[in-house]
Image 1 (tube, rainbow, N blue to C red):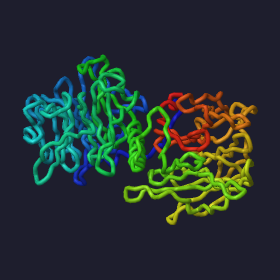
Image 2: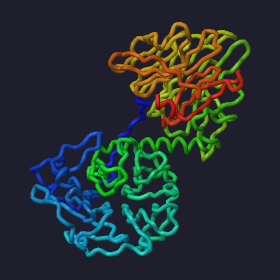
Image 3: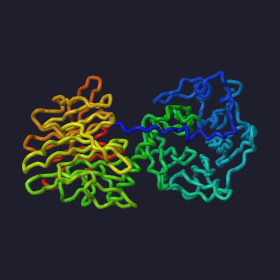
Image 4: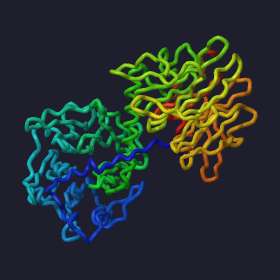
Length: 582
């Protein structure tokens, strides 16, 4: 979806990449003549969210093949490879030296696939198909030596990354690969490298190479050749290490970083603000590459998205069900979607370990509604039961949890007589405390609500969708949305507002309630107007009534309610890809 945003996080790469020794202070940091950013970046204007060529005419020279650029962790040295020769620059006397051949690496600086260790005291590179390492002692570099025999093999070794604990991730053509080149891991223990293990999560029959690993093994970026979702012949992918020690499924870094050309990861700047990578300007070529750089927020956003997806998926897997594709299916059949009448989208806590939803209940001459919940404990979901803040004496439902997990919004009113509507319904907000959901505050009269990140609330008011804005700590007077949303010929209700208010999904039904469908409308904030609603299509809408739209915390799945057999109301879910395209 063109305006679809995931919740961003202030994840800071500085903590990952600034691995400087207390006794190691560069000339760059001692200098008082220049600003840090100006000197670190060769007096270039830093890029934004669009990649730009790095140090044109100094490092990136037209017609030459530059790659594998890296700063030392303290920012005092810069290395890169050009036409299979390693160059370096040092910051001295308030300025950078000109690029010079790294003869201290031996063999007139011949080498490629260069990586710098997190402490800056080792450089590992490829020469003639084997991995070599140079170590630094003070200001002096040792002679290059072949890396461990457990790492080098009779086949071609490509790129290797040393982590903070001295372990190694590397790409190799060694025996046992699925494709031409695979990614392996060797743990450093008892003073030596252990036998390498292939990382099955990454490796395919294609070729995986050019790896970049964070010092703490938090994430790994690599290239994959001609993958199914590639934008070009060679794309960059990222994977995060999860709480259980496993790696997440690799995700394409997207069309801003990946193009129709070959793209390859190199490094981050020492302050963690910018990402350096390589890009060819000739399709299907790796012989005319320049070094590019871009704001590292593109990486941090992807990391946060992957973590949210992984947390949610890891929790939901314990419901013992398969994830849906682009065909909607019943969610958690016989556990959450039962023979009862489910009457809301599910609300998930950010960690994916608690689920809340509404269920219709018939009692004597009234219709009530309860909020049910289940939570993940010791790898199992508890038996669903009424939420502890519910009374069982009112019409209570519509649970919505804020993105930070600190607020829970419900509605509460008097039960409805048969064939009638619930009465005196108010939207109520609970706060998260160490004891659970407490301190309820009544906000507004209304039902079937949804809350944006800024606190604005969209809800159903009689037969229309209304909004109250949260400004300066107070809620405004309610306003009914325009006729593009509230078509007077239909009942318009059960809204879902995007976290950034960029779009609204809602249900529209005829006044007999015989038929309903979900629509989406986009918000023009500048003009405070809504676009003509668009039908979500036959993969979601059917001949039955669809209502109560919502999304999983990671935004990957879309939820709604639909009768299973024309009567029993269930919660359904589907991948949100089709909605994102609208």
